Amino acid sequence: MSESTEGERQSGCAAIPEEIALEIRRLAHDLSNSLEVIVQTSYLLGSLELPGSGSEWVKMLDDGVNRALDINLELRNYIKAHTLL
Image (cartoon, rainbow, N blue to C red; front, top):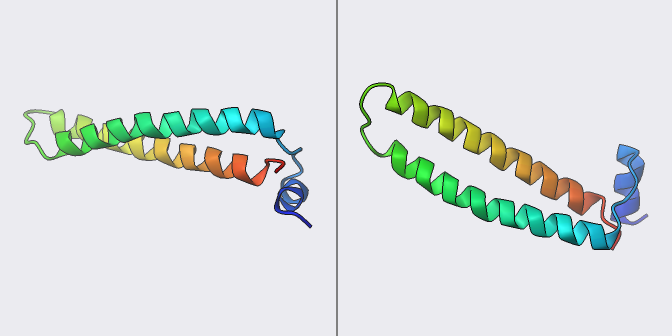
């Protein structure tokens, strides 16, 4: 049984047609690139001693960035598992 068929069977979802999957992969890749800029900015902000509640805001940013990275990885894995190739 192929990987995409196995993924279909396990999730109960139909496979994503290749042409659509390619566009979604391109968008996910572009999202990854944009997130990388945010990750680096968050890291640099975290290295500063910010006054007041600045460090709390950096922590909130970092938590949001990490969640966005997790979601993007889930998206990419889902696309990979459900693409007809």
